[in-house]
Image 1: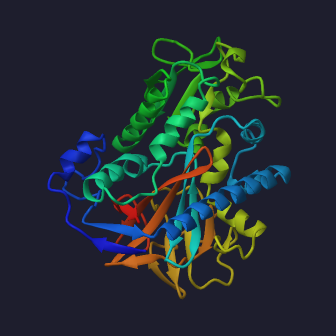
Image 2: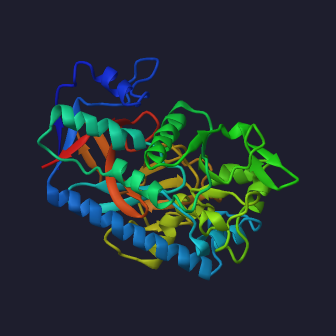
Image 3: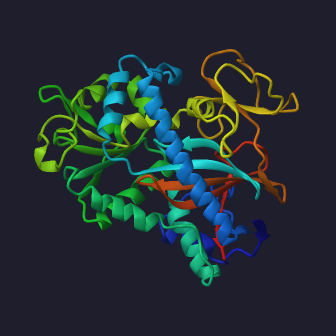
Length: 395
């Protein structure tokens, strides 16, 4: 595994625009997509990442079963009103399309940093942009990337379970809209009919107790790139809970012909994904699997005896609120607010570092199966919204 410098394509911006990747650079000229370098792997190293991703998915499923069995959802800050819906959703296993585990990999060991399971982004660059880069620059090499094909296959599997049209929604940012439009395109290629609707345009029909579009048509299936914790904290959160399945949910999430025209919404991703996107999962995984080779020590009550660790907000995004401590000294962020609820303390991981860059390896899952990788680089120890995306190959 090594980082290799290379010459960008002369027309790289134009090529990225042509495949729908429109956030490659910002208005002030900052570069997000960086093809001045790439990461090269051996086939054996890619297999290590593949196998680690599959094992982490298994461990995470076991952790959710344990949390529900032992009634410990409060560790995730899930409200009492939401607990029955989360439990019913897990038991009924409504459709789930995708997720991404972020990994530390220094060429020797792989460690889980976090699981982005509800609203992961970075998909277009991983699935499409780097694939076309590979065809242009290294057509005789390969890439850990079957994302596009697996997404289409998953939507095909859901044809008998979704209502038509399938609505796709997001909060309105350019990155989120780009991601949703790509996912919508893969659904269309699978033969589904789809429509886009902004989250702010979704209405509530009180008489039929269901969400509706601007023409008052019921929204039977909704893919939303919008976090569950945000939804549940907003005025329509109680309505969202009311559209979820009751204690015997199988009829609701059975084939399309068995579902009511008005009534519950099939949400993708399902509400139980809240437990995987919450970083309390890291502490639960360590509690259940102490010493596991893919896990780092992590705790909900403080750093304990750790001298080098990362303090993460349970629901933080894009590196927000993270503090990094090495040998007892803060080297990034701030520990202000120490002692307040809402953090996990995770041991500092050995990271891949090269040319002044620190890399995080995002390993994607489609329908619970490893499907591809995207790499983010930062100039410091924290990956945030200014960290660059760098392509990869393997031979």
